[in-house]
Length: 266
Image (cartoon, rainbow, N blue to C red):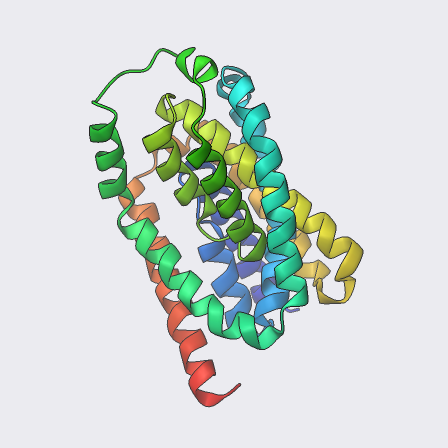
């Protein structure tokens, strides 16, 4: 890998780590970069997910106080995210690469649409909640509805298979079903996403060693580790619209690129 390729991946990891901590969907930065640099799509997902684990840890550390205030909710939702992530990783490794080639563009499009409509979804969630300002202890006292467990489980499968925008999905679910404030929800999102990426990464280490591109993993890990701290510390000062625009543009480029490859049969 030459200097410029390494620098692009490193900066992509930095940006993705920051975005993941703030709004999620950082994989829509790093995945298109890896594909554009010539990595096979499934290998790009594997290497990307492993690299972003580091950013998940730094983001989780940055939100440790908010996470402590919703410890009960985390303990309830962690197992379903973990199992979902394992299933998603299994599907990625055992379904033919051709299946991913057809499914990935649809997942990218879904992720981009979720990012575009995130403000509207958040506004709808707030309206549904009656614009209440929840007491920080409300979430821990809440009896979680069964539908939330099911949807978090399905999001874990999605995240284990593709990783992109699982944080956006989780934040939408929490806005509707969870009695938590925004920062508490974000802390839960960061940790659940970390769990999914971590169990997927362990699965790749055990069963897909040959698909891992260690140079890309290391560069994304270093960048996302720094980005996770940036997102937790100063990320709230960054313009959400600017972040969203970057994500949408890169996701659109990735979508078009994969559609062209499908048409050309490559």
